[in-house]
Length: 228
Image (tube, rainbow, N blue to C red; front, side, top):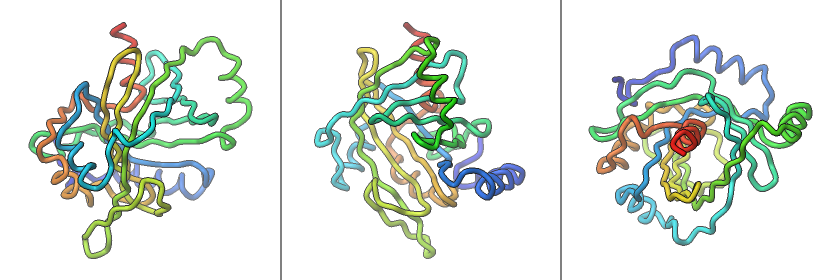
């Protein structure tokens, strides 16, 4: 398995990504993401966020509504605060080693929000009875990490406007009567995941995050519904 530090997107994917940035809607949000789900709080991750003034107990809960799409791990439909978000995976997941006790699936995603979504798609979704909706209550803390030219890292508020970087988030979930936790690293702009490998490895050095716990929300939701 490749380490995150040595991972590089294949050349054809890099070219495709650049072409999309040039010719697709500027409002399309693109990212590369790692995410894990677990049933108990992770003390190491929790301590890291607490040491930077972010505590789950201080955050009000919000509810997102996801559409359950059977047999589909590469698309997501979500309602948040009255806005609809459509998300699709652009390439196959790549397994990467983060630390001796953490490995995950790195995935590339594209997202459209609200008014950016074509009206026909919104109407088809709103009028369809084929989608089962799942309410997920969330308490989330997070930061944005930006790597500087001298290979140092600066932390910013989750809602700060930065062109490039890595968003780190830790969330407590209530879904279908169960409590879950999820941790994610999301690279945006022109940020390269491998350049954040050392930072992420140090952050997660005590967190046991196995590869089979790594997935995006569509796969997580599917796993919950299959078990019911």
